Amino acid sequence: MRHFLTLKDLTAEELQTLVERAIELKRMHKAGEIYQPLKNKVLAMIFEKSSTRTRVSFESAMIQFGGGSIFLSPNDTQLGRGEPVEDSARVISSMADMVMIRTFEHAKIETFAQYSSVPVINALTDDYHPCQLLADMQTYVEHRGSIKGKTVTWVGDGNNMCHSYINAAQQFGFKLNIATPKGYEPNSDIVNNAQAEVALFTDTASAVKGSDLVVTDVWASMGQEEEQRKRELAFADFQVNKQIMSLANDDALFMHCLPAHRDEEVTADVIDGKQSVVWDEAENRLHAQKALLEFLFLN
Ligand code: CP
Ligand code: NVA
Image 1: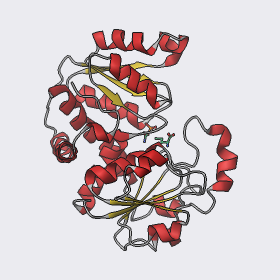
Image 2: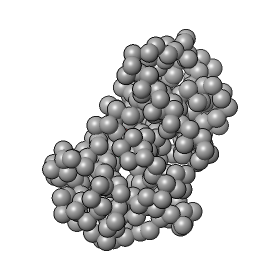
Image 3: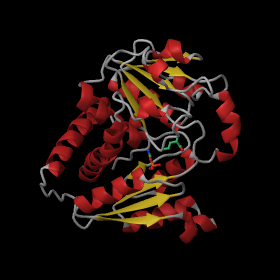
């Protein structure tokens, strides 16, 4: 049995195959082909934070695959009333065929996985968002071909998305420049583990030069809402705008996992402009996670 808590849970070869499979599943879906490898299977989805894309993509994936999903939130389950994670994991995994979790502490999903008898998927923790990276890698490949040997620049917060980009740089073989304000760098253990691929910057312009892909995310993630004002000041020089994009390669793409705050971390002319592939990126959550579900169920 395999879990998907970070991109490191799969080999580089398996991830490559997954991206190719996602592209094929997308083609099949667009052609109207019915493919139901998960008939009668159940995905339990635990959401302790809000979601649009993740919920719709996993639910749609399970319906299209012939199975079903159950939405569980702390508000209306015993999870929110303090039932131990270990007990919840044993019970939920005894009835569902796979469990997807969006939560705060990464340690919680690790504990859940330890006590689960079925595969567990990380649908975002404070530290990682690996499902988003599957979609991002698929999107890059569809638009530009292999990302191996390319340069990607991450602009903004050294957050969960940034950490998953570091993992992706190692697994997919690209160079990753990371521009953050001082004090908002990614976790140093994760960076130190990826010294061959990652370079840290405190200046967006230097980081973005020669990039094939520019990526950013909100300045305040879920759970950091009360820091919004403080972060707006700290991140003022870390906006992706036309001028920053003009320093990247001419054919550079722009990505953002969404939801976005226009004219904060990215200007409207960039996210709604020609280099932006954010709508394909969002749609690919569906196709990439179908490839992941198929992989985890059938392995
Ligand atoms: N990108 C992403 O995970 O979006 P949601 O929060 O809407 O699921
Ligand atoms: N970094 C963001 C990503 C949302 C999909 C957050 O954690 O809120």
